[in-house]
Image 1: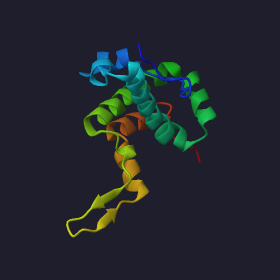
Image 2: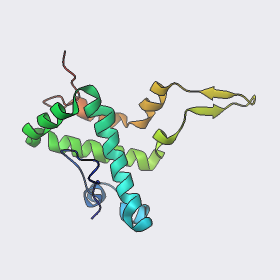
Image 3: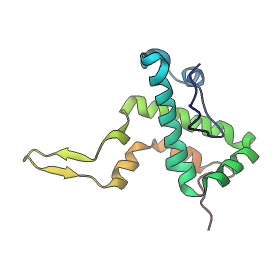
Image 4: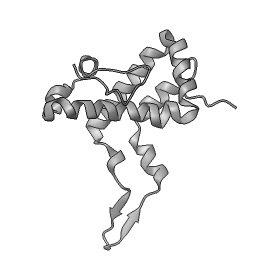
Length: 143
């Protein structure tokens, strides 16, 4: 059973088995090799996307983690579903976060995309919408 590494200590996580139970993908088969390191790396990446780009990006991470712990019964399933959606998105679209934003044009030039354009494509829109609809709203930044 592959899990997120200790460097990614998030309050709600999924394992490779939970991912497989809820998708048509077997991470152990689809990402075979390196004694499971590819699976752990994949899990770390998708958790990082959901937490670092969404949940923790809209407020202090320690406060968000305490909210998740306090309202675990309301937030655990939506967060796990968002993780699964992001994982499917990564498998189907590759990790666009590794893209540097440059595109060669037909004329031989280079078109450079803004960081905001890249970040918008890293995240699965369904996962964003799912988390935005949680109660309490885990993406709310206050104010």
